[in-house]
Length: 534
Image (cartoon, rainbow, N blue to C red; front, side, top):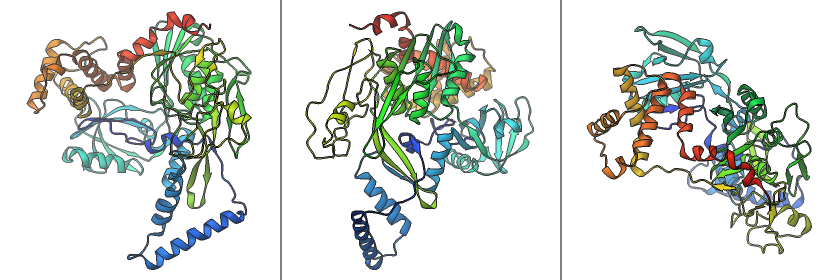
């Protein structure tokens, strides 16, 4: 059972452990309950206005008013939406989920599943999870859930059953590989650790690869453990992948940066109207890594991921490669309210070591002039930054790294070396999203048996896949088929290896076949040249 189901493909999909998408950009940078103080007269006056309006609605509206919906969804969320996109009201479920994420945990069974019509296979189980303790392993087939047979459900009913079953005790009918008779397993959901370092392996001899999916309290320890597990003292370089990392806890990102920076180095500064200025410096660490780094980013690298990328870039500690990042540089506090709900508010901004803001301007919000530098905000105490007001004058536009290299201002992190990402053409995107390659891999294994890691997809196999698509009514245009051969071969192989050896090995092959990652890995001989100042 998946902890938080994220459908990636249909009608054959893989359920992966993932963060709750709606909350990715509002993971708390500070989490603390606040005791309300006596409101000033202005606050009390405005509260009376709200009360009067709500009273009139409740008395005169044509139908009875749902109080929670009117106040929480209407009043509170409407008020927050007038500020900026990052402020949010968290209902009870969202607030609890957010706290789990901050701990790097989720309630569930700790397994990743391959799901197709009439079939569910276990691809991996987290160590110490309910699934692992019960004895489930890759290759096991789930044939029933609480007595309901999988093969009798349509695809959507199967997905709904999996989602509903992950949060309560469940009885699974399991067939182990090579067996014919199912065996019942009773599982109870529990908090399962969600690793933030979700991929790490040796890219090539001496070059490590690591992908960080988000920043949680345990991320620095996970990074160090992954590097030590790849024989850190003998590593010659690290390809640090922050693509699609939507952020998390800024303290965690600062601690990860400290693993690669000299003691006392400034990592970032946070400041805002209601929070004291705080300067994060790299503390004394039990271990520090000095090998060369290439950091890969994209437009979905945001928040704490940008904090780490900026610190490594401005101290000339890493070459940043990829495409410009998202541009989210605001400090958020989460206040615990009554009824186990929460309020996420933008409390300030954070600034890179050189003083630039990561936040991209958002016209029409309170972040209209968000890209003002730290030095400008410090000097111009009367600066107007509310939506609709004039921006302050004399905003610095030039910022430098330690070596004197210029870096851009205006939101987000601009890479030192641009490497465009790949976008699937419409036909390949359709075939991937509908899960035809996953279904084909499953069918191939059932008729040909297992393959080893040296297996390569042959031209004859591609033609067989093409014929399979056509039998299923999928048109195969020549202009797409001729250009997608390499990507089709890689993805079919990845699906095969994932089903046989688990997602970890499949992900490794997929990453090594990624052209953007391949080009980033090719930058190691040029790092010194790229980081050289004027």
